[in-house]
Structure formats: C-alpha cells, structure tokens
Amino acid sequence: MSDALLAAYDAVLFDLDGTVYHGTRVIPGAPETVRAAREHGTSVRFVTNNASKAPDEVVAHLTGLGMPSEPAEVHTSAQAGAVLLQERLEPGDEVLVVGTSSLADEVARAGLEPVRRHGDRVRAVVQGHSPDNTWAALAEACLAIRAGALWVACNVDATLPSERGLLPGNGSMVAALRTATDVVPLVAGKPEPLLFETAARSAGADRPLVVGDRLDTDIAGAVSAGIDSLVVLSGVATPKQLIEAIPAERGTYLARDLTALTEPADDLRIGPRPGWSVQVRDDVLVASGDGDDLDLLRALCHSAWETGITAIDGDAEARLGLS
Image (cartoon, rainbow, N blue to C red):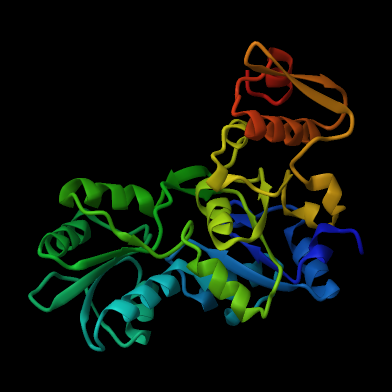
C-alpha cells in the first residue's frame, strides 16, 4: 500500500455523480476503495456540483450504497452558492431560489430570506439543479435578473449522469436563462476552486487529490485550485476528450475508475509509458508497441499535450474505440 496512489496524498476529494455512483447504482469497488483510504489514514471528502441534496441526504445515499459518511465530509455547490451570496448581500436580503428546498435551507442558514417569486425586495437569484424546476420558476428568475438582481448559479454542468444515461443538468437550465437575460451568472461550484479549497481545509490537508470524471468541472476545478487529479472513465470523460483537453482541463493521473487509488501511483501517471512509443508523422500521432489500452491512452495524451497534435493513427483509434 505504501506505493499506492492514495498513500501519496493526505486527503482524497471525490466527485460523486459518475465517479462514486450513477444515481442509485454504485460504481463497482467504490465502497472498498473508500474504506481502504480511511484505513490508511487518508481523509475522505465528497465534493459535488449537485445542489439538489443537503449533506445529510448525501450521507444517507452514500451509507445506503455501502459508504458510511458524516455530513462534515460532504461539500456541495449549494453550500458554495450560499457562501457567495452571504459575501455579497446584507443579512435578511431576499434571494429568489430556483432549486430544491435543500438549496433554500442553505440560503436561510446564510442569514438570507429565500423566496420563490420575484418582488421589489429580491436582491439575488440562486439557481441549482432540481428535477422539479419548471418554466414558471425560470420565468420568476428571469424577471428578477432583468431587474438587476445578482445571479448565482450553483454549477453549470450541462448534463447529469444517471443510471439511465446522461440527463439535462443545471447548466442546461442556466443556458436558458442566459439566453433570456443576456446575463452571465457567478458560478459557485466546480470549475471554480472554492469547493475544493473548502473541502481541503476542512480535512486539514496539505496535499489533497481530486478524483473526478468531468474535465470541464472536476479536473478544471482541481487545476484552478492547484491540486493534483485522477481522471476516471466511469462517467462523462472520454478518450477523445482527454487527448484534446486544453491545459486548464488536464489531469495528473488516468484510470478506468476510482479503484485505481490502491494501485501504484507511477502506473497511473499520464506520460510516456513502458511498452508504447508515440511518434509524429504527417501531423498524426502514430503509436507502436503493445500493452494495456489505458497505458496507450496515457502515452497519447502526453504526446498530444506536448505537441498540440490530436489526430491519431487508425490502429490506435480502433484500439481505443474512437474509430
């Protein structure tokens, strides 16, 4: 275990949707991996852009999936949204809530007054995911934003992983309001660094590791916060996205899923890999050799990021399922 990836860090900051579970279905091996981190003495935090559930609801869900946790280990974008509002408003100011009752409770805990309809006293709008968000709720928010209210989006994830596949996320609803108002919201959750910074501080961590499945939120947030990250392919990220990733969305390590935390760190690092050679020929990355498909992807990502060339040869495409 001394050479395992989790042993190199003093806290692991797990994304949830697509990383630990898909809706009601746990990622195979997740409970055992979280338990291994705890037994090693590595702090565990769960950092989610989903603003629809309160920390105790997240804990109940995790516990039901075999990962007993504490509310203090959960950090949500609803909490981050409430922090942004509290920093910018006066105590008692009205905030129009587009989202769940859990989001409204976070607003109230911040000393503000959650409301559901636009009025003269509304000073801000906070928007988070809820399966019950309606056109009427968006209409109230549209009126408030157009009247000059501060607008905070808990997150801008376009999609939400589920056991049935990708569903519309809060970002899709945010995009509708952006179109209707020509206003860009403040974003509380990932990829902004606040959630990761807060989670790391709560764990007393000097060297945390982010584990996530989305390049544009989890990994971009880690880069923004200056934290190493493990990209997992159990959710949204694809090999093509990894090869084409911009510098702000590039992870440190790559694995199929979070169970790799118990594997040697050197085996997971994105970079040149034993058994594989990648060369540039006519502006195409040509891989030769043999070995693990993920090692091939790690090597291709390294070469693509170093050269700026993202086209790869047909054999590698076929092997990675890109053709």
